[in-house]
Image (cartoon, rainbow, N blue to C red; front, side, top):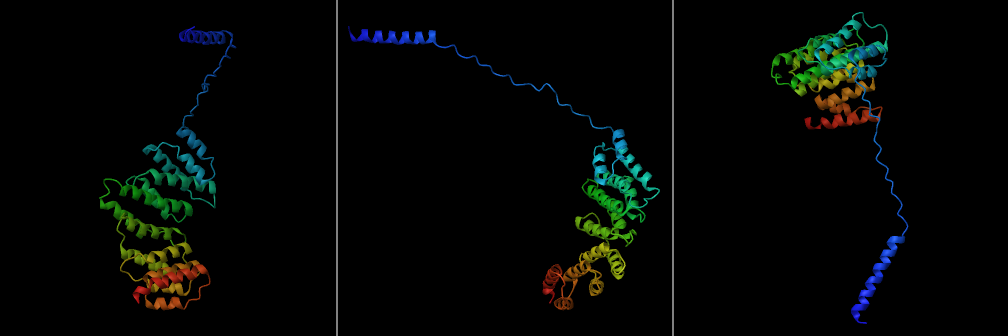
Length: 305
């Protein structure tokens, strides 16, 4: 046989082997692919509670945070702001007896809501200012009300009609001429707010009015609330072209606490003179914190030598 014959026979043998394999092979196992399971249970999106439901729950909460979280679910519009303001008026008209934490918390949450969503030109600002000055209201409510007024001013400052100087004058007058009383921390907070307003360009604070207010507090340093006294000491360093160093020295000479002394020393480091530097060098600090404060103050007075 020729070479061609051998090739043909070999191909036939291979073809026969393949045919036999295909005929007698084991049937392939069926493949069962599990279909992707469809989530037939559609996620149920609960509708937000209605304002009526929120108010019904509101009187049941017992903390300021819980009350604020609940009010956050309310729609923000003029009508709702009016309801929140009415709640404040209705529940503070008779005063707050004792530490009724749930009641105070709910009022505070309403005040916070007004500060977060109201406008400077709305009537709610007058309510917030009155609360901040109310010597009979709980201090936390007064604190939140004062902070809310500043929030309104910040939002007003960012609007297109912020160039109107009237509202800036109103803010400055409120912060520097209101009688907040020195028996709580609110007077100190108002001083801090005035300094903040000046730095942020919210209003022009009259240096003389602020100086007179600070001097009055420092002269009564033995009786005013300590937080207010410390805030006044810190604010003394921010009043331009005035001399309050003498009043600060009086406080430093007979401090009622180490915290007061630290504040006085820190302020003298900014507005003092060479004599204050010499006095600092003679101090006998009773704590590491006071030592560090005195050291920074002493160093800060070096350029004046």
